Length: 85
Image 1 (cartoon, rainbow, N blue to C red):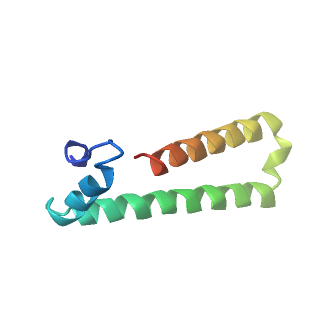
Image 2 (image 1 turned 30 degrees about the vertical axis):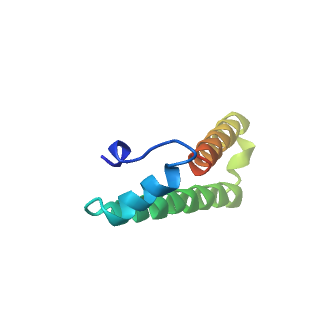
Image 3 (image 1 turned 180 degrees about the vertical axis):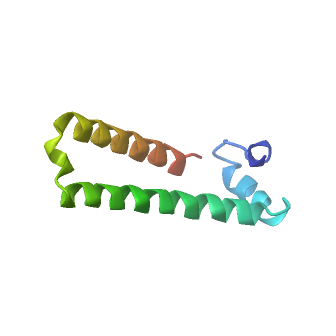
């Protein structure tokens, strides 16, 4: 697991990511798959929202509001993951 190689300390976080990319076997691949997978996840979410807007799913207020709450939670999770030291 890459979590064994990552250090969440402000002074050594960047060097631990560099270590993962350079020294851990296939670490660069796993890191890139993770980043691109997260981007594809958001693309799928936005396509899903677009489909809901096109077909008028926003008329079902309770379901739509739950979807908005889930979108906000996913965005908050992505933000926290992005600003990790």
